[in-house]
Length: 151
Image (cartoon, rainbow, N blue to C red; front, top):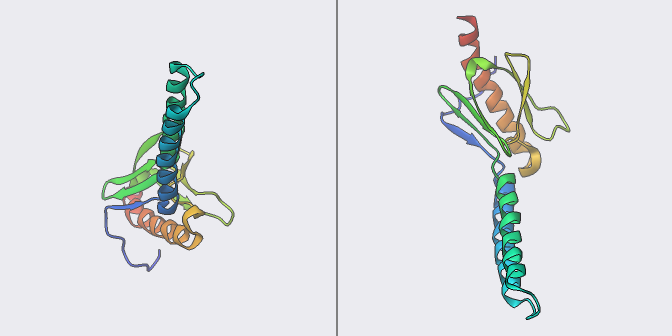
């Protein structure tokens, strides 16, 4: 067992730098495509302009989807939010936290024999921060999950 300082719950891990860039990019896309829809040549029809604006909304929606990932730990367990899906896990369901050199994000080994990507902890926002977050999550899993599995 680790001798690390206990993590105060609840705690949320998310790639903040990625989110900031994606949110800014989404705003730029919305503005750019809206302006293009207005300044298109007279030969473009109304439905072409609407589709140009809708394209901006679509690109922004994809950007917002890419900014979703996060991992939230609370006293009852983990909530893993990935690009499209979210999953709620009790502490006893998480067996191990894996984050090896070169991995794009943390992988959680689950008690049912499957693995779950925890995209909210990734080196895209800084490798040192991702390693620290993975260690904190590993310590929480060891502290909170072991008692539930033994009992």
